[in-house]
Image (cartoon, helix red, strand yellow):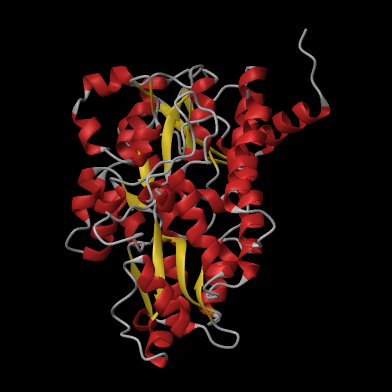
Length: 427
């Protein structure tokens, strides 16, 4: 007999009481009330009044009209508890059909055998592999098998305050594109309470938003066996650049070690940071609303040296169908509706991510050329490291990166400590 701990029961209770949105369960062309329930888990609450809620409710309506035997149950779980609750539900036999899962949680579900191998769907519809090419898709492939269907992605960007550039005598239309330019501009923009360069450096957001710099330096996080191997030349070089912004060039405040994305974005709005080098495309809307489009710029990340291709970390989320799903075919059909260009276009133009589906990208090409540019860039983005323990890796690496930035450890000591702790914990 399975033993249920208080924590175990608490998670099941949370699922049972999680906010749920049900479709009408009827169809204009149907013969009556739906007889089957398709259950979807996500962190998104569509009871709030915004564009995203409206779009997904329309997706639900289209699904239920197309498949009148089904009603869609949309269950919202706390964002930071989705991975934990799915694990407990699976062990307890509590079933759902599919889930909207961010990249950080995907590999854990795959390795635990909780989600279906969707390769048969990709074989049946071969155009999907090209249509959905992205960091999200690459993160969903394990041993040549496909376990996820990308929906929307996102990426990190280099934002700068054009008004502060003007005040410093810099061209507001020419952001730093090479690291040496970032340093020189940062020095001109640092004065009093204003710092030239900032970044987010707390917990999960720190190494995740550091990924593109590691890749551009030729570094990596893991070896071929999945063990931490951050203490390599490329990753050391990337981290040394960040440390030097604080310790050597003094264009970045030491306080960045305690700044999450929201705090970093707010500091830029308040004029405390002129350039931010690793906020997300999702911050663009808030920056424009606060500062005006004429005062904020967005561009790809500065590269370590000329001739290197600029890259972006890309996360976003995908649909995954549970191994224990009662209605996997219906879940797949729902996903195809949600990935229609007309729905993706409205989500994207309201700044709820970037389209993954190539048809969704083409749908916004003429309506928003800037978003189109970023969506095409995101197709070659860098996914999270392929380990089920990525959250643990980020937490360990983050604290050691912070120590390096504060000169409590050398760069090599910080990365060596990361590798030792992660490998001891997980292997």
